[in-house]
Image (cartoon, rainbow, N blue to C red; front, side, top):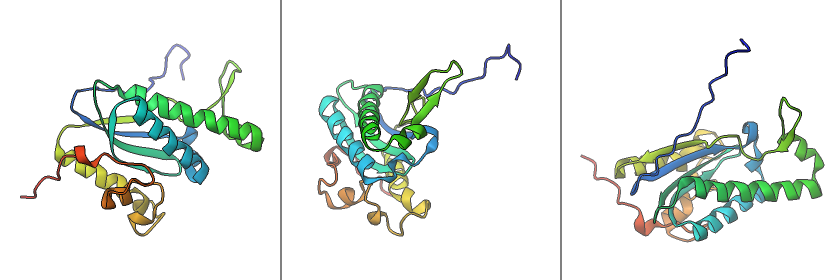
Length: 194
């Protein structure tokens, strides 16, 4: 590449439009399967629950895949998506670093982000904000919830969505607050088919 040309860097644009729900997708560093373990998924769900307590938003659906996450949520009271993501991602990354330093120094190597300057940092999440799509109507919301819940099937990880332990599909179907409560009372009803 020509040294005078600065490569284009993709940026995630966030539109914190009042009353819009969001479909968020973000990946682990270098798309590695850091969320393959129950430990890391547990950290994520704890961080998501803590973020709900600190930043008002309603959680409608989620799935944790081995190397990425999908969330469907509805921010309330002026909550910014960036604040929610920062709270969740920072908590998970910090817990992983503490654990890796104490129990698996070799895992730290997988988290290494070496800069051309020689600086080294450790990452759990891919750089950037991920993917953020505003969901502007009930049809889009329900289409994305179905997409999220079917993700483990499309990947061949399970035969039935209910068999994937790191998804909101069971809580969505039963209303039980497991493994993390959903806010289904605020979810718009599915649109009637014509």
